[in-house]
Length: 247
Image 1 (cartoon, rainbow, N blue to C red):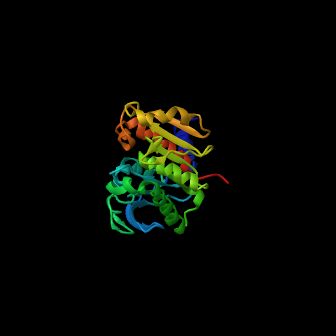
Image 2: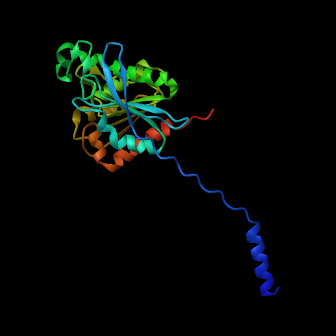
Image 3: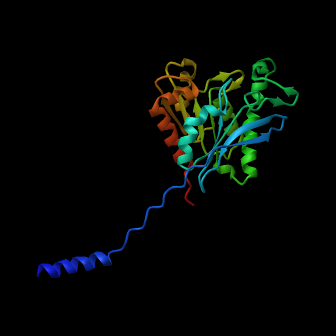
């Protein structure tokens, strides 16, 4: 075949080939917005909310003693890119959640009257707030760090529809909040050997059905995110558990 004929044939074939569809860019993650809701026992709580993309779950996140919702920023930023919703709250007596039923109170008074045990209601209130906005109960997970981990575990026991649980540095008993796990619930628990009280939880917890554990090099609670591998592991696990479920 003459060169000119071959060139014409190739040009015609190229023109007939289907044009590949453009890959649709993922929408930018929503910016967090501050929301406020009340507990049944009279506390007004502040939280940072990022809604989930369609079909994905939302995780409620509880911080440790003396901290705030902002400690979760490294994780919530990654989850937002994957379309996972987050609701990181200020526990009662912390940061923006200072007003209680008897007037302003600080977490520093909680040990004297057993208030810590009642703080699981903060996570229950967060779940009710999400459900009131159309988030299905089966798409609301719980997570926490330090005493927030123990509170998240208690909330997941109370809310049987919760699909997964994330615990960073839980302890056997923090300030009267004992660690309870729901067998069969997909659960990720992390601790560091430099934090022996929390690290001691990993071995017995690993024997509970549904529980996966990991060890970070150092740190307590979200401090473990200083290790990039630990942060990626946690984010990837939550993304998988929060993914849309096939019907």
